Length: 122
Image 1 (spheres, rainbow, N blue to C red):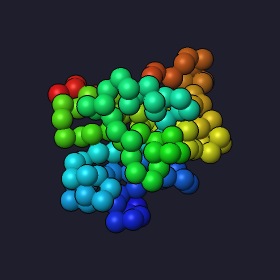
Image 2 (image 1 turned 135 degrees about the vertical axis):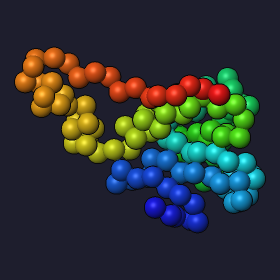
Image 3 (image 1 turned 120 degrees about the horizontal axis):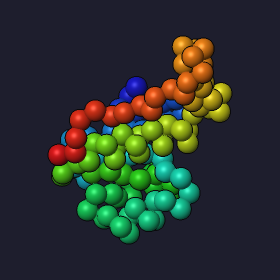
Image 4 (image 1 turned 180 degrees about the vertical axis):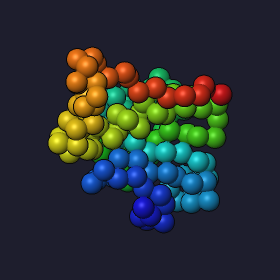
């Protein structure tokens, strides 16, 4: 869904925003994605990898992190950050439904297999 002339991804609330390079007001001319992170995590990420993460305008003060997408990108890391952001913003009932074992696995008495992200980091 578009908001503020950029793509947003929602689970009721926004959990991810794409900062396209042509929108220099939001991206500084570089592609990136903005994601919600757990309290205290943002400062650690910024201190540890300022070449990969940045403080996004507007939402940074609310605990969001920007991830640059124009360098060597670990897509596995991005996928984990997107999932964490989704979990932070999703209603509890939706998180619970997502985490529930499938009816098929439940009938066999087995645990569901973990979701994997295919591909590799470039």
